[in-house]
Structure formats: structure tokens, C-alpha cells
Image (cartoon, rainbow, N blue to C red; front, side, top):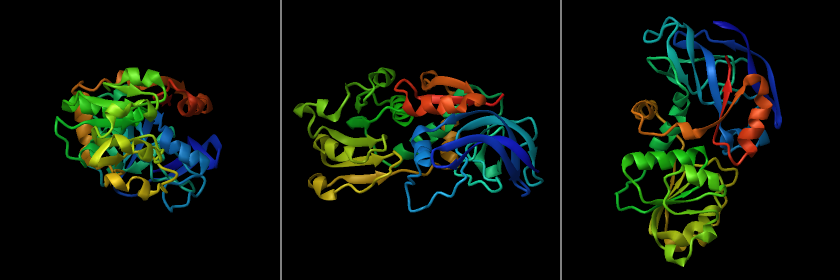
Length: 318
């Protein structure tokens, strides 16, 4: 399986273009998928656009973003026995591009990828299936901390990740947690009990209240500001994409916090996320704030990265 398809490609920092992208999917376990829709992931894509990697890895342009997509199988390699042409799937990475770094690789009219990057839906897709990845990431993170229903939790940020944390905590039966979010409209969408526009809005009566602080904004220096709210030896769960990790530990060491980093989602967690969404106990409708045809991808990115109302921006490929 090889050819060229239309794709959104970052040619260099801050220069994005809809162009032809060549692919070669010639391994036995490869799959070719016709894309129905993909979504923009603001935190991740902002780092790619600005060329500010979160690790020592150096970005090599051109790069194709896009880590959340639904589509239909067009063809498979001879080693794929559990998928066939016509099957509907969720795909979270396209890794068979030629001459283009597949940092995520799903913003294309067809996605050439390996079987390990595909989750079979077993039915026609609906737009909530685009949330499988972000919910899987949240499940992965929450599994890393031990929570009791008496635990007090503070969310920093209610973007797509923070809002999904709110939904998942509510699904698990946690109904008493708070949040900090600059844009009040996102607070209204969440299940948070007390919502502040800024950490300073939490008065002294909230000091030493929280067993767990979940950071989702990508601004790691917020941890220092939030430290007065954390209980002694409380936990901090990092879920953002961080340009800077150089916080001064001396400024938070008096609380001796346990800092937990979460960045890996397993296939089992993807499967668990699909099952939770299928059960209808996660309100997915609130996430989808914008849908654009791929021809308007530049407007879609401006909306996704700059609008306070935007949570999930969808690109339609059909």
C-alpha cells in the first residue's frame, strides 16, 4: 500500500500547509484508513507550532500533527486478521509517512498506520468516539493515584483534559472537587463544586485542604502558587504538556509533595475509555464546540488555540 494523500503538514515552526503527503505501508501488520474526522489537540499542537519540545527530542520538520481520528478501513496487510475493509475504527497515530515526521500523523484524508495504533469500533462511528484518546489518557493518569471518596481534589485547568478529568471523577463517584479555570464558561461545563478564576481567589480557609492537585494547563509554575492549598505530603499529578519544567523545588519542599507524571496511555486504557463512552455516562456533547471542513483548517486552528469557548475542535474530512 503506497501513494499520496492530502494532509495538514507543519513545514516548519508556525508554517502549516494542506499538501500532498506520500506514504508507504508495506508491513504485514499495516492498515490504511479513510479519515472521517480528526480533532485538534491544543496543548500538544501548540508545542509543535512554536517548536518548543517537551523533552530533549529535537523536532525534525516537516511534521504531521493529529492524534485523534475516526475512519473506515480501506485495506490491510496480510498479517491483519481482525480487521477488514469497511470496518470503522478509532486511530491515534499514523506512522507510515515518507519524508514527514509522524509526531502524531492523523491529520490526513487517509491514515497509513500499524495495527497497534487502531481501535476497532465494531459499528458506525459517532462524534463522541473522538474522545476515546483523551478519556484513555485521563484513565491512565487517575490509575496512578490512590483515591478514597473522602479525598479532596483540586483541578488546575478545565480545557479538554481538565474537563474530561472532571467528567471521569464524576463517573467514579467523586462529587466534591474544586477547580481553577481562567474562562468561566468552562467552569460551568464542569462538575467542580468550587471554581476560581485564579488560585488567589481561594481564600485562606482552603489552605491545606487538598489531598491531590491535578495540573492540566501546561504551566508547571502554577504548582508553586497552589502549594498552600495542598495538604502536607499531598500528591501532585502532572497531565499538561510542559515547555518548562524548571520549577524551584525549594519553594515547594516544605510540603514534601509527591509529584506524579503521567504521559503514557496503554491499549487497555483506550479500550476502557471506549467502554465508558459507550455506556453513555460521560457527557461528550459538551466537548464539541466547533466543526470545520478541512479546507478551513487554518481557521480551525486559530479557533482551537485562541478561543476561550473552544474545547474540542473537529476537522471533517468527508
